[in-house]
Length: 425
DNA sequence: TCTGGGGTCCTAGGACCC
DNA sequence: TCTGGGGTCCTAGGACCC
Image (cartoon, rainbow, N blue to C red):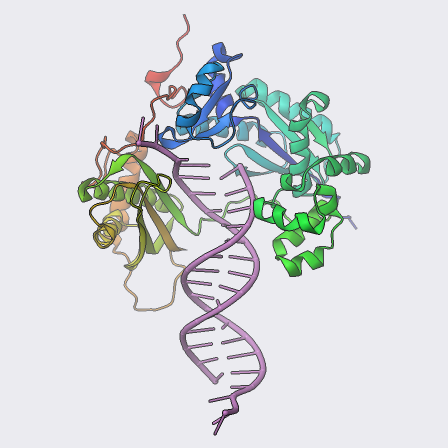
């Protein structure tokens, strides 16, 4: 009889991922601190290690611009084509070295190392070295018996980078206790700002306190989520590796405009464009949607600005992925929502009630999407895959809208555009 | 002037049924 | 004035993640 091996997970996480991507193609910036901005150059969403002391996460760019200049910190607009491509390179490299990998986000992945007989810490160091050599991206590795502990191990590897060399194994009791005692409870995966505030009065301040708390009692007081966190910290694995990504249950496309919009016509263009993009995502996972939510709003922060925010859910005639049906519904909904006299800053399209083809059998005589539509949408995606996104699009979607995103500090698309390739003299 | 864009899961409470 | 006891399903909202 074979015994189930002790579970072992690794969490591999890219250091300052977006900033690192920018640096790979700009070796001249090796010693220049850099930050990367959110869409519309709104706020800071990534900082290289040498920029961290001077600027906080999520600080608005217009407020820190002067400070950045003073310390010689360079800002970049976000270049998602570049980051997406670099992420794939990193993940592919890791996949070649571990038995099973769950890509958890653009810059991190869990590996299941259960049953591996080699020295896992050494394996971690090999992963780090190879990813660095093959892609130029530095990563940290945390190893432990549960996902939550692996996350914490990774955090420790980053916090004590010099002492650990970027790899921490918490399977041994001594190391585990030390790290748990030296980590604030807020650093634990699954404990956010609110939960931290709730735990504080209970005398739970460190990860160690939480690991030794009464899991059942916390479940009663809060929810099953925190119970699992406590058990995971105490060493009982409750969260499995999710290798295959299930199709999304909701698809969202929401974006600030590059400038405030007051007229209906340009907002309609934006709504059509976001719907177009959402429908693309929908088809790429092979789903159909039956409901959409359309919402618009003004800015939130400026106290002198009149505020307005409203959304509406519309039901589609049948489960569909037809961009024409969806655009029509979205534009009609917008007519209901729009009130003149406001300065709008954002629109949002949410696709809901998603299902896979053939999954719904609620009514034998229900109307279904015509076969001709299926063929047309397939052709649309094929052409755009070959010639680039937006080659064929609905008439209401402009190619270069006036209200488009502000991205004034964008780097080249080194990996996805021939005319942006690096030149070597 | 200028403050991101996605997602997930859980729970409570209402509607409805027998 | 009195007015059951469940069960299920759905939705909205909260909390969290990167």
